[in-house]
Image (cartoon, rainbow over all chains, first blue to last red; front, side, top):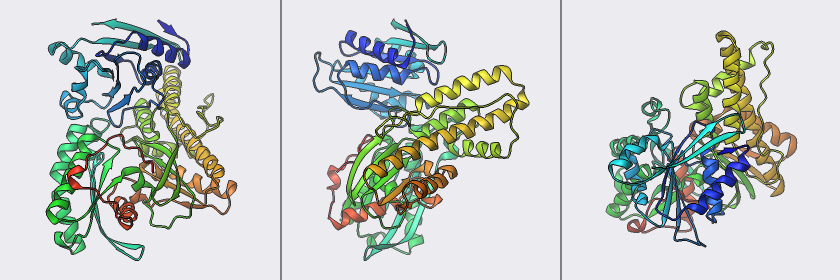
Amino acid sequence: MITKSEKETIKLGEKFAKTLEGGEVIIMIGDLGAGKTTLVKGVAKGLGITKVVNSPTFVLMKIYQIKVAEKKIRNLIHIDTYRGLEIADLHNIGAIEYFHRKDCVSFVEWGAGLEDYLRQNKISYQTIKIENISENERKIIIKNK
Amino acid sequence: MALESSCDETAVAILNFKNDSFNILANLVSSQVQVHAKYGGVVPEVAARLHIEKIIPLIQTALKQAGKKLKDVDCLAVTAGPGLMSSLMIGTETAKALALSLNKPLIRINHIEGHLLSASEKLKFPAVGLVVSGGHTQIILVNDYLKYKLIGETRDDAAGEAFDKVAKILGLGYPGGPAIGAAAEKAISMKKLSGITIQLPRPMLDKQGFEMSFSGLKTSVLYKWNELKKRLKPTELDNAKCLMAAEFQRAVVDVLIGKTILAAKKYDAQTIILGGGVSANKLLRAEVVDMADKKLPGVKVIIPEIKMTGDNASMIAQAAYFHLLKKDFIDPLKLKPDPNWQLVS
């Protein structure tokens, strides 16, 4: 899919949120400034979260509760491994536990390094790859693994 | 005695309070920045391990420096958030153990509150505070001590985080703040480069409200830089790098100061407070004084000394004093760190 502005990326995130059922782990791949956090903002909006979704780079993980939910999803987990996070770190902050919960959906920015671990531990996941085409255009590829 | 370990600095301070004024008997910070520099950012697992190694010896050194014994400590304070969970835990668990074994009261402090009170000057209320660091970019209305309201924050990246990421794009090294500041200073003395003008946006500056955004600015730098790389010679590129750093720094400072002045006007602030690691930035410090002078004459501007801008434990003790007056203690067994703790009252 191609989006032509930040707004369209947010819209796409909202749409994608409607396909979620709970328990999904989504690995996000894309360069600095690709729009990974922007897409998660859209997902949050689609899930009915009104709180500001901002970069989790510093705290590694932000958890947003969903109060009025149509489905059984109760938490959006937003993780960022930009700073070269290791599996031990993800255990430390409790992130891994959320991957097994049906009432959570987890988005992991810069999560490419996590794929081996997820495969070995038989945790199914999806990938979203965002490619920069121009300053405003993005190519977004969503895959089930 | 206050402990601070929310990110990559282990810090211990011992302060003596008397009639609303205080003496800093010891204020020690053990920084891990060199260790994390090779990773281009703080690695939490490494940070936590170093906090464990450092905290007890640092407490011992602080006591020695203050000429005090552990039993002389009347009250303990500790940063309980926001920050990295695994880092926060080292400080809180140590403080809990000390409070229990010494049977002394324990106060939990929000890291942002510490930054707001990191200068020793008395505040006139209402005050508007700008706290900017690697993890935070917030504008807070302070109606009185202990009365805080968040009125604006970044929608995406923190200002310090943008500095780090832009420094990485430009290949300037970590931490990004000082690296960009140094490159920007070179730009001042540089001759104009023919055919190059670098103009970056000032995100959200023309919008109402106090929300900020730095992610788009980072993306603009990325695109302009990639374009320059294609068409400039290596020697020109070095100069362009300094110009880009200067324009980026200017853009961030314009947005931060613009929003802070706007907030101070709206809430009729008597004081403007600056705090957090990014408040060590020279341009930001100069500009806040300048703009307040021009636009809000009579408003007091409080900027911490450079050594108090980064994370330290003295600011935690200074904030704890106001909680101590209200006997706002917490049962050590009930204290849990909160990585996303919002400062509100």
